[in-house]
Length: 242
Image (cartoon, rainbow, N blue to C red):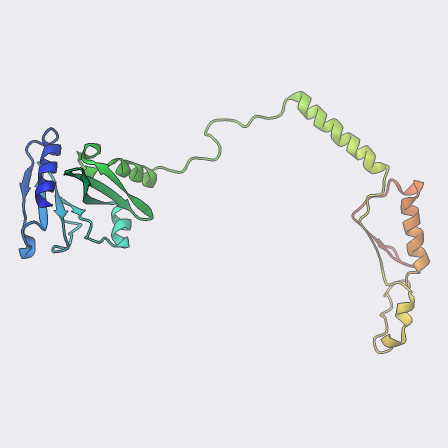
């Protein structure tokens, strides 16, 4: 696997960074082939092909690229925005290198080496561009900046005014009352023997409303003289005024 990675990287860098150096590094006495360092003029990549060496994320000049068996924790993905991985795909009799970009709460996206570039910030893939753009761009406004909302034209406003006037005329000719709420009413239930221990409280003003008075109010509202009386609720009293 190490030879495949080195030859593929050398071919990829031939026209991008001809001065790049490759080294089978042995940090911490790691076996040869566990780590491949690719050094450029100002920075480089450290490819971890197994777990023999733990990635160092803050080391200057070397960006970790993780093999398939090397795990990455959630906090690292959040802090670094993204992490690159590497794998080999079998295509016929050859094996092709693929570079993956993983970010928190995003699936790993895989690319060919031709899709990747070395920039001043390090290894870049099309996924890196999208991730950085999503983390640095403000969400679009619901209303486009500088674009005024279109108001109805004069004819439309006139039609609305006429429609409302017609509705008002209709309201004046019918009863628009949802509830008639009489105060305590003198019904047989008030004198029921079962209520002997809880006698009804007499209104502080006036008297109990008569059932005939409730019927009379209802009849008046439904008659020709009640068309102009509107309201959501009418409160009926007896011997007092609200």
